[in-house]
Length: 212
Image (cartoon, rainbow, N blue to C red):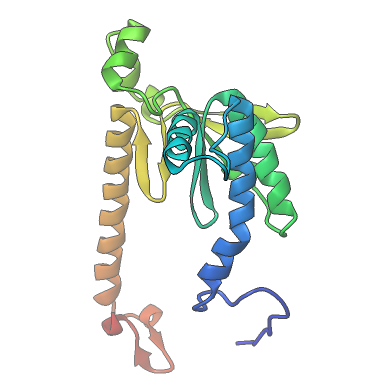
C-alpha cells in the first residue's frame, strides 16, 4: 500500500465531504434552474412580493421546469429547448468549480416522462404496443446531439436513476427482471466463494472464504 496525501479537496468518505460537495454544487444547480426559467419566460418571484404571490409564482415555474439533485446526480426537468440551454449553462458553471459534466453519461428521457400512460396510448393510437414491448430484447438508446458537439444518450424506453428504473411499463419490468438475475448471480457467487477450500481462497496460509 502507498499513502497519498491530498493537497486540495476533501477525503473520499470524510464526514464533511458530502457537505462541501453539496455547497459547491449549489450555484451550479441554481444556474441551471435560472436558465430553465428564463427559457420558459417565468420567474420564481421577487423579494418585494408577498409570500402568497411568490408561492404561486414558484408553483407555476416548477410546473414548467425544475432542477433536482442528489449531490452530483442532477436531473433537469423541462421542455427540450429549455433542457438544451440549461445543460450548457450547467456544464459551464460546473467547470468553474473543477467539476466535469460527462456527456456520455447524461441521459435524455423519452416521451414517457411525466405523462399518463393511458393518455400516451391514446395519442399514439398504437394500442399501447410501443410501451408494451422492448425492441430486440433490449431497451432502445440513441446518441443525440443537444448542443454543438455535445451528444447524450436518448433513453427511448427508460433509464435508471439512483438505482430506480423509470420509463415505460415494459422497460421497468425488463430492468427489474435484469437486476434480479444479476443479484441472484452475485449471491450464488458469494455462496460458492464461501464454500471454496482451494488455494484461490487462501493467503499466507489463512483461509479467506470462511470470513464472509
